[in-house]
Amino acid sequence: MAHGMSRNSDYQAQWARVRGRMREEFGEAAFRSWLRQMTLVGVEENRVRIAVGTRFLRDWAVQHYADRLRALWNAENPAITAVEIVVAGTSASAAAAEPEAPPPPREADPGPDEKDISASLDPRFTFENFIVGKPNELAHAAARRVAESAVSPQRSVPYNPLFLYGGVGLGKTHLMHAIAWSIRLQQPSRKVIYLSAEKFMYQFIRALRFKDTMAFKEQFRSVDVLMIDDVQFISGKDSTQEEFFHTFNALVDQNRQIIISADKSPSDLEGMEERMRSRLGWGLVADLHPTTYELRLGILQAKAEQMKSQVPAKVLEFLAHKITSNVRELEGALNRISAHTQLTGRFVTLEGAQEVLHDLLRANDRRVTIDEIQKRVAEHYNIRLADMHSARRARAVARPRQVAMFLCKQLTPRSLPEIGRKFGGRDHTTVMHAVRRIEELRGNDRTLAEDIELLRRMLET
Ligand code: ADP
Ligand code: MG
Image (cartoon, rainbow, N blue to C red):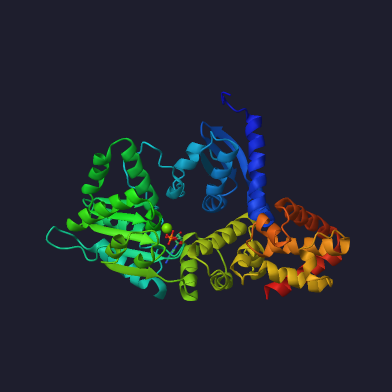
């Protein structure tokens, strides 16, 4: 079958299915507050364009949903390999020209024939925008030091390599970009390459395929500063590891600065050869610790000011207190609050913030388990715990079971199939049905709605 041009109605049907999948995966709350507002506005060759109402929504969508949207579209229609999220009312070119809001570079698809191997740098990731606190002060100081040291062939670089590690969203990429920006500004003659370990692998494998490893090596030979982000992804791939090792050694021998990030310390990098692991730990190893309340509040205050968004101090304190997982989520929460303020034209109160962020807050709350939910619900309805798993369909046990499934979907990060398995090996469609059913009933049945509210409170405290 020739896969010719799809018609507009085909795309709309595909979009409807993509949305359906997103709804299942991200849940009702996310669907109502974000996904429902997205509209398909165009398709050009391999790229679909989706519009949202405001810049905040756009940034939020890019950060949280773009990857998944792309994957789902691609599954629906293999010809689609890119998804662009724009602000409604701006055409693609207008959006690109919008000066304050360039599309985040991490979204940019490098494309196969890109000349410069270095990935683009996020303009927001500068030292000026990095808030320093106890948990990141060592990493920050080391990054500054590396960025500011003027290197000559006679003077050796301060730490080689500088190895930054820490959990997701704690600022590793931000610091690396900040180093690169700073060097570009102050020592423009130094050649800096920043790329993800994945891209390094991709480039290398491509070079192998086109028998062009000479050119690949050449690119690195002339580099003064090489930064490779998320190096844990290099593990396991033998030939790339080998190449990485050689590149690394050659550059260190020539007194070039190398900066590496990973989610673990060098010695904990699994699937990495022993000699590589020990080599990576030779310079300075600096870890980014989980954030403290003070740091989170500092970051929020700085971002709110930057965004010129009017969020009451009480709300910022509340966010810093509640959203503890990582800075990316913290930013996401602030963006959402700001979007809400913009959309409604009113300041957000503390209650308002809780409402707007209820799904995020829940995810950061104490983790409720499926077992706990089943136990509580069984107690509440006075049925046997075993009936949560049993095949009995009598209303007296079937309804509580549905309530339990509903609460599992709401209160835990578990997927529908996972939930199904915990309920006596039921299919995920059964769980989905239960969730929808309870949602419907809850609207008309006061008692049921109160039961659920009561159970939820009990489970969450
Ligand atoms: P990582 O690479 O460690 O997963 P990122 O560097 O991508 O994390 O940081 C995630 C988000 O949090 C980015 O938007 C970044 O700007 C922000 N961020 C992290 N730490 C700080 C900080 N100390 N000050 C300001 N922003 C921060
Ligand atoms: Mg990163």
